[in-house]
Image (tube, rainbow, N blue to C red; front, side, top):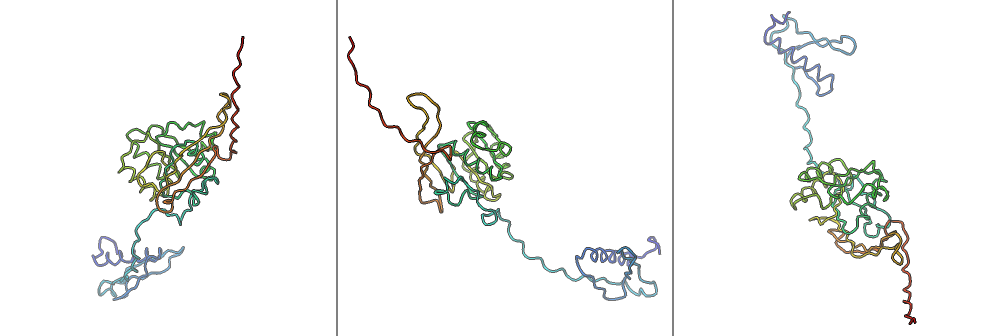
Length: 284
């Protein structure tokens, strides 16, 4: 029987048989034959099947291939962002543990104001743990300073002047980078900041801002500090002793403070005793 002389019913039988063979191969659905002999399926070697139309004398009516209803798929669950239970919080340097005992929560927004060195120390610890980081709109952070603070430059992306595309740049980085630092040169409205916080929460990234950020979960503020290293008007700045205060929302609602010495790991330098000024002596 050629295709040109096949009736409409015969073509329908062949189409159903081809569909049944495909479903049998893939295991999508089982095939039941009812209402007639239907097409015969015989092994044809190499795992294939040879499907022949029914004999003309037996085809009193078109064979029906009845496919049972597929099992109902479970209701689709609403998509949710990466939550803390799926990915643990990002670790912070051990000296910060008293005020950040749970580290930096993925999907959360943290504000750090008053110390660029503290931001670099947090980035260095994150990169040492395998994280990728980026800095947007913070031109005061130089690559040399970042490297000296221990930041792995191979894992750092810097966009010092994002311009009018700041919302797009930050959103794109939140999609693929673990920690995104946003500085004052990123021009963002409060509505855009809220959207970016929601995006970080959905992607499981850590949003770290060096300026005020509405709705931030944790706020770290440097209230006071003292530099050491310059004695009698000469020398080099070596350490920065700061008083760090944590405020925020939720578990961070109760304020905590911490005395910290930067660079992290440096020992505080004792304050030298004040020496009395030499007295005046009359000459001549």
